[in-house]
Length: 217
Image 1 (cartoon, rainbow, N blue to C red):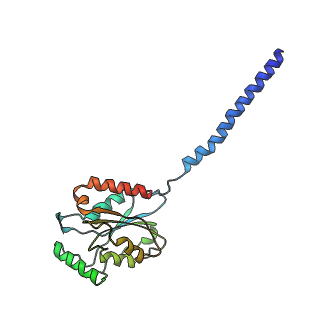
Image 2 (tube, helix red, strand yellow):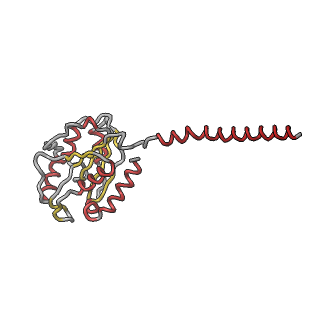
Image 3 (cartoon, rainbow, N blue to C red):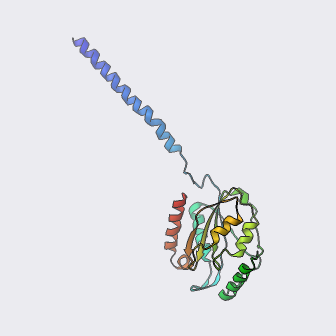
């Protein structure tokens, strides 16, 4: 009887060890898979570029500014994403004075002008995702940005617009980008009031952070 009791006890112990071993075997691959899974939009996987046009000088409601509204936002996006930067500059700079600048911008829009670039980018092909920044002028993209878009091939790339504005939001800019770059994927853009970028940057940062999070960056 004692031998039968000992035999039953040994069988029970072996069964218990087998169950513990099975739990570990099931859990191990799942743990390794989670550890190796990369972030879907990790900057280590993709080459990011922030392209922006920004203006300094006299600004409505702000006086003279030494760093453009869009430049402030562009630099923060580059810092957050680890992106490289390229500034779009016209061959002929816009006037520092506000009124003359707005008049030229209006004339360029009405004539659908394409102002010459001071310099074009020479390594766009190496980037997968382009954050595209600009101010809104007369409810549209500045024409110098249209020059840049049409001078380069964005096929297969992801374009993410952002702008600074005085109350119009993104206006027609997203549609213009889609029309100019039909073979690119254009994601939802971000609009930040110019005065916020200059005078309340923590609020602008919060908007950028939330936007990037929604995009998965």
